Amino acid sequence: MKLSSANINVMIKACRKAAKILIRDFGEIENLQVSLKGPGDFVTASDKKVEKILIEELKKARPSYSILSEEIGFIKNDEEFKWIIDPIDGTSNFLHGIPHFAISIGLEHNKEIISGIIYDPIKDEMFVAEKGNGSYLNNQRMRVSARSKLKNCIVFTGGPSFKTQNDDKELSLEEYKKFSKIVATPIRKMGSASLDMAYVAAGRCDGFWQRNLNYWDIAAGIILVKEAGGFVTDFKGNHGYIDNKTILVTNSKINEEMIEVLK
Ligand code: IPD
Ligand code: CA
Ligand code: CA
Image (tube, rainbow, N blue to C red; front, side, top):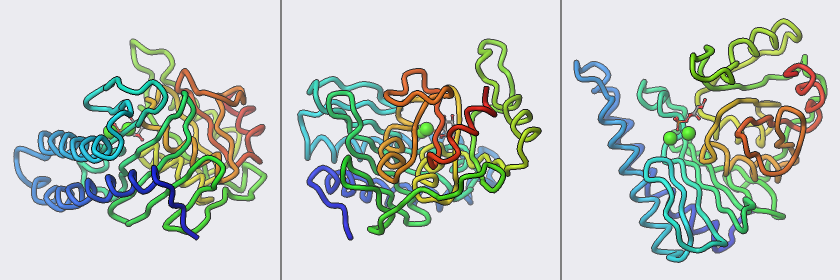
């Protein structure tokens, strides 16, 4: 079965076009890894190129929609509809030649995410979801996993692994240590929050938590997880708009257990 509404088709088209540049540039990274200059500036340029194509394509198809995109910021237009774009989510992976990153586009209607796509161009995996119509991976319906005991699960987290001086909220490492003391659950840091969420939606992993994310990291993931039957909450289990970007994503069955551990 295929998910194909007018807006989804617009998103997929924009994404596929931008992904061509991304794939080509990723091929160049290998050469740059060994050069003295390194791939740093090149990656920034890729980010901007990909964003430019996405915005051009989305604007062409939906001239009135507002846009929030990581590099360019907010382009105010229509109050009702807004695209939320992360041109490359997983930049560090991209920079190091690790094939795990994605383009992420969410669509908000009256402040609610109604559709989203996350595209991993290297594995050619297109994760798509629309409110009320389910979540799909390359046109196959996705469901979250059925695992109900945390000890049998794999969970993802992200963010810096240290407590920064200016931000006492960056507790990933402390949480990580606490977490691994309490449960023997394998924890992975994959380096792309959008793919982390897409993988929960696909049932490949069972949960994900992180602090201090940006809206473009999670916008598309929110609808993917919800439409696949998962929960997107804060650390206390509150559903609804995730305002402080502290996010807990689960297959729903391990939600309570995860909240306990993260307390
Ligand atoms: C980052 C990735 C990473 C997460 C960071 C994000 P970027 O996004 O999603 O997994 O841990 O918090 O900033 O910089 O690659 O777009
Ligand atoms: Ca990101
Ligand atoms: Ca990014």
